[in-house]
Amino acid sequence: MIILNTIESDAMAPRPPKVHSSSLLRYKALLIDAFGVLMDSKGDLPGAIAFIELLNNSKHDYFVLSNSGIYNLEQSEANLKKRGFPVPQAHILSSGHLVPRWIRDNGLTGKQILVLGPRSSFSLVEEGGAHVVTGLVDEVDAIILSHQTGFDYVEGIDHAISLVFRSIERGKPLKVLVPNTDIIYPKMEGFYGITAGSLAYLLEKAVSIRFPQAPSPVIYLGKPYAPLFEEARRRTNTMEMVMIGDQLLTDIKGANDFGIDSVLVGCGVTNLEHEDFSSGILPTYVMDDLR
Ligand SMILES: [Mg+2]
Image: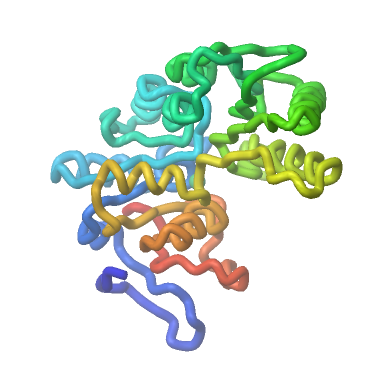
């Protein structure tokens, strides 16, 4: 853990101390969650654009690290730019960007992959050299559950569990890749939606009921699982990284499990004043926003 100058800390309760964004530059590399740290549905969050500009100007190592599973690098860069964030491609890493290599590493180049998700996610599969199939096909070599949109939930999940069940019965279990591991997301004030991770839990549960002995077919790439953090370490070549995020269960748990420091911000889904950290998942520091 890197000891930073803290702004305040409550001596009564074991709360993580509060820090200022500028002190985070003491870390060799910063991993910054996008939604809830840099932006929300209304636009950019306080201090976020200036902080990214500071990192760019000082040539500090950083990644905008998101669980998004549907955009390639060009699309991710354009999406950030549209919201006012000048983030070069070399500093963008989302779980969807790990899909092409996963396809190649698992011998799925040239194979048929059922993609449950929108059209924008197809390019990631094609980049890995696999063929995208959609609809109610009889046989595939793998399944990618890339997003909660672009297909009919019930029909899509029913079809996926049927394919997985048949593959287990044949002794050649299919893998189901889930880049976006988020469970829910805030749509707008007072409205929430389920994310691809929720559908993956349904699928895992269904498989565990019919085949209690079978290992889960689901492979997760995004936070809090290790692959995204491992890729960040590979590219930055350091463990002196800090994860800045707004969600305890993904950003902070992921950082804790991977063994790096973390900062929980109060400008996203977590309300810092009401958070009592009773879940046991503790960030190293807290911060209101990137100002
Ligand atoms: Mg977030």
